[in-house]
Length: 310
Image (cartoon, rainbow, N blue to C red):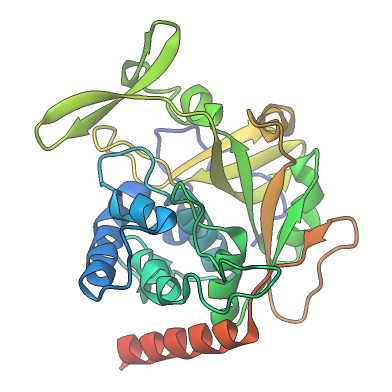
C-alpha cells in the first residue's frame, strides 16, 4: 500500500536489506524455481505437457540455473498481489500458494477452447516460455482480484493513482535493467565477451557464463513519491544471496527502460483492491479469458486455498 512519502531511511539500493514493510510481499526467482520445476515435473508425468508443442517444450526445458526461466512475471505479479492483499498469500518457498501453483492451475487449460479468432485456443505462455498477461490476470481473478493489462504509457508515474488506492503494479522493462541496475552492486557477475555481456551463474558443479538476452524483464512498483519509485525485482543469482531486492530509483532512470529492444509499446499490469476502478488515463487491453476457464481456475484456486488452510 502506498506510503505518505518515501522513507529514505528504509529504502535502499540493490544488494542491501529490504525495507521491513515490504519484506513479506517480495518473491524471489531463485527460491521459487525449485517449486516451479516440481510443478512442471508433475504436469509432465500427468501428460499435460506435450513436447511437440513449442510453448510446452520451452517450459520443459526450464532449468533452475538458466536465466530464462519465465518466472519474472509470475513473481512480480505475486509481489503485487501480496501488496494488494496486505499479506503474503503467494510465496517462493513459503505462502499459502507458491509460484509453482501458477503452472499447476493454469497449464491444464493451455490450448483450450479454440475459436475462429483464436484457433490455437487459450494459451498460457509464449513460444519462448514466458507467461502471457491474460494468464496472470486469470490467476488474479481466481483470487477475487481485478487486474488489467495496460500499454502505451511513457512514464511509470501514470500508475501512481493505482498505488495510492492500495493497488499493485507490474511493469515490463528493457532487460538491460538487470545488468545496469539489479547487478550494479555485483560487477563481478557480468563479463563482456566480444562486446556482448555475459552473466556469471553459480551452479551445483561450479559456474558458467550465460549470454545476456535482449528482451523484457518484469518488476513490481511498490511506491512512487517525489519523482522517485521503489521497485521490487525478483531477479537474483545463486551466488549473491540477496533475497528480496528493492531499489529507490529516479523516475527518469526507470522510464528509460520502457523503450524495448523490439520497439514494442510499453506494458504493465494493474491489480486493483475491491470496489475500485482503473483510472481513465490508463489504457487497458481486453484480456481474452474464456468464461469456462475463469470458472475452472476459480474453483481450483479455491480448492487449493481451502486445503492449505485446513
